[in-house]
Image 1: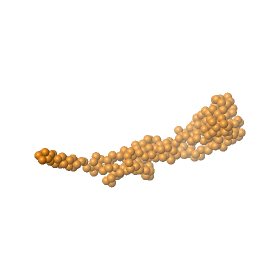
Image 2: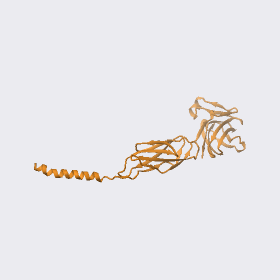
Image 3: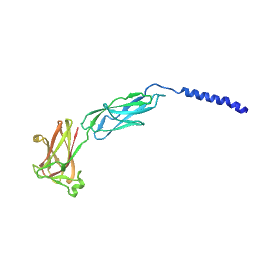
Image 4: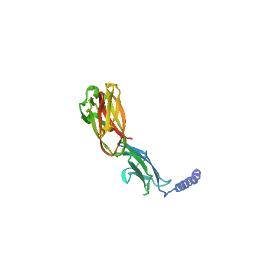
Length: 253
């Protein structure tokens, strides 16, 4: 009994101290904070990641959700940390500027907007298979076993053997500027060259020389043209020798 009487004051002291500790817990009316981070380049037709870091004030209410915006358009939300969001870039205009921000809500009804992040759209190279273009002159599509094994689209355009032979491809340019045009070509003859020009501007044709490394051995050649916004025709023609084409690509520099 004496032991119990001795322990009772200690038990009461423990209760009092515990209550005092609960009362000492901070209570904050300060709103939460939010920061948004992302890359400065958004690659077209890929996922662009937005990373939001939300923090409640010490002792403040818990976070509820983060909403993500492109301009004024809501593009998604997250209710559980980490507050990351992947935006699928559908924009196709090179150098177009995109603006993003996020908004955080807590369980007390506070609403906080993040900083704004901006990114420019980068459009990857667009490929056109030679066999899918308009084939001119005596040139023709080939898809023999060796060609199917080595060519990007399992076919090629061969027999580019005289002045009128080659291909025409139509492209759509969404932003004016310098464009890299890459051609994949090959030959089994020495002294083979092709010429390439835009919109039938023959006087401004550029010529590339194809080393003889055998048929179906593709080499790439890069040429730069300044293109205005709109539709253009790319023409590749025989210049000398005998050659073949696998594909062409174009991309803004």
